[in-house]
Length: 293
Image (cartoon, rainbow, N blue to C red):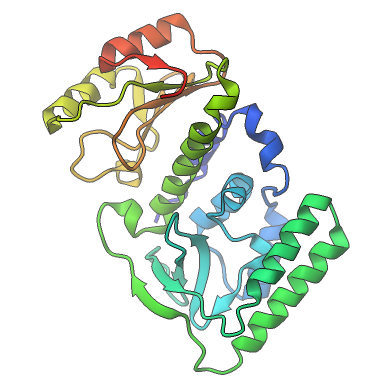
């Protein structure tokens, strides 16, 4: 299991300032706040999840993919961090395991009221109501503590995630996948409102019929300028697919994102994409880049 702070710091540079207003309701957490959560939970959180809470909590909580640190709770022998995109499953770890293996389950909330406390916390955060936040968190934790008293309480439909590639089953890679997915999702949802913004460009769609050789040639052509986001290639690997999930420019001027489903590239830059960088990228990929789809 790898720490992912280096990769998250790189990705953080490419979250556009235009999204900051939408992310301000939630915040990233300090080391002291993480230590307090660990004390409450009686566990040392794995380094990749600590990195997520320190550097990307605002993005992932707002996107609905990460549980706020204050609401982390054991459910039987399982501790859930993530909400799987589009599925509703809770994703987390099993008590006593240090391997980084992930499990998925359905939350067992017989009274179906935990979500009310979650909504109260979200409302209090939006309003800057510290007292309201504390009350919502206290009520939520009290509720789950009471549920966990019977030793028979456990999540529903628990199963270990085992499918390859790594981002499907390992905590470190799954966290990076969610961040990359969320960054791309925010850009895809907002480009209509920012049609003059050239810090995010999308390529033409890949050909409807293509071979792995086609993508291998692209990988070979970009490698002098774009390096995989992580030195640990398995963290952003798409299995047998020749391209990685994300690449960073050798001078960290740009982030090139493929995503889970290879439909088109997205390139993010800190300022409007410069002619030389963009022209070379278009030459290397054989694809035109433009605002939106």
